[in-house]
Length: 126
Image 1: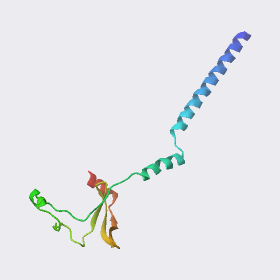
Image 2 (image 1 turned 180 degrees about the horizontal axis):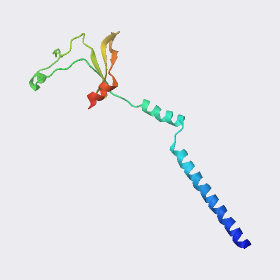
Image 3 (image 1 turned 180 degrees about the vertical axis):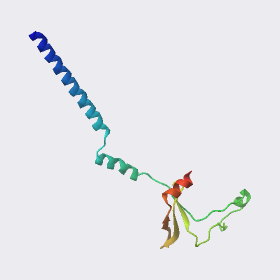
Image 4 (image 1 turned 60 degrees about the vertical axis):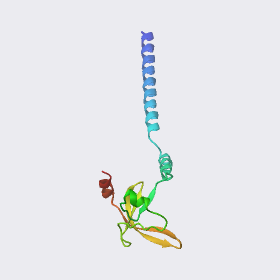
């Protein structure tokens, strides 16, 4: 009888220890899934280093192959925008803002005058 009790008690202890180990394993798996704030910040910093292509579109036109072949030094190509019109600012080919051309010393630049709304950017992407 006492032998049965000690076996039952040993089995209960084994089951309790096994259950505790399983809970600990579950906790460890869940902890490994969640990232700390510093880990998230570190991952986001990597995105800040990604190079993006920024284009300022002053205007455009359509030319025939013959017209292009006739271009040479000093040729003038008329664009569809006037000097007063805002220029398009594109990032990786997507319109993100409008701006105006500025000259600082001997360099061109663009002054951002309007950011394209997120909804508008999504519409243009579709």
